[in-house]
Length: 422
Ligand code: ARG
Image 1 (cartoon, rainbow, N blue to C red):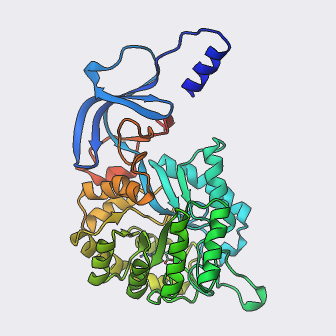
Image 2 (cartoon, rainbow, N blue to C red; image 1 turned 120 degrees about the horizontal axis):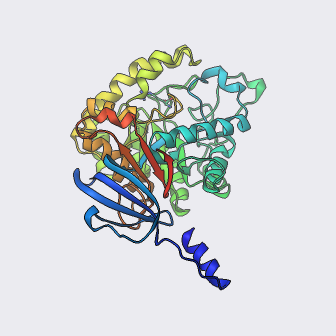
């Protein structure tokens, strides 16, 4: 903004005295998520939405700045990343209640949830599935500055088999309901990938097994043949898009890894062989270990089917044990919460669960910063506080390496140099 303004002013021959920098932050303790070290008493300079300089506070620049921010007693972290959200979904609206929500209504729900997500310190998210390309509209509205929200990588409609987890199976056949992303057969799926790309998707999501919250699907059963998954992945990768596969059952997980996906979502029944395959192929595991508690305590009120609650009673426990095994085995772990199942804005609750189920606090923060940045293909621009990266910065009252629960109460949020919460 500043550069554009100054050059516009220069072009019409007016000289103005302007401050040299947009923003100067005084940071108490800056976390380096690579190694868990803190640098104390630093300054961070921000220009045009990017971090331009970091250094010792005693050597801070003394020319003018437009805005000074005092975080001198705070723990300062990069903005967080969540690899799995559904911003247009509502935690109070599950099961048959969902049939009452039009796509435009879902988009408006998304506006509310985008703000809550950013409030919680999540400055970049992958939206893994939305009807009617509502997530793409939301992403674009945020980028245009119409509404506040995180940076969004949007998948558009999730791809799935007829009658699978990514279809909508709530009504009998005479209603002719079929989710947007349903297709069967490799070429039909290639066409779906091309269609999602055409309407603005950044990545592709597909369902490789049944799920908890869908009607009539078996969490253990693979969905799509290997040929179908391979067609999706090849076509997406040709178009420069990454692929996220929803998969609970072991066979679906292994087939999706073999087909070349970039992340497995949920990963509930992953075997040791599956973990080894994920490691060999560099596939990230994104495991929503907070979800189960919410589903089992609030799900019924929110309209979840009895069938879903029954499935969850099995899936939740096993998923958490699988998480522990995957962490112990050194698998690449993403931070993916599946917000929308539970209320948006509570994304940060998952850190403590990840720690409870086997990670160190630093590992859980790495998952939501540098590792997710790598999974998103955005390592150059987000995930750590470094010159040249987006000024996506959050602050905490306490040291999260000592008290991981503080990740639930982020007190300051900046995205792209703009203060969103103070
Ligand atoms: N969207 C997922 C599904 O319906 C949610 C699974 C939540 N359960 C869990 N234990 N993570 O399958």
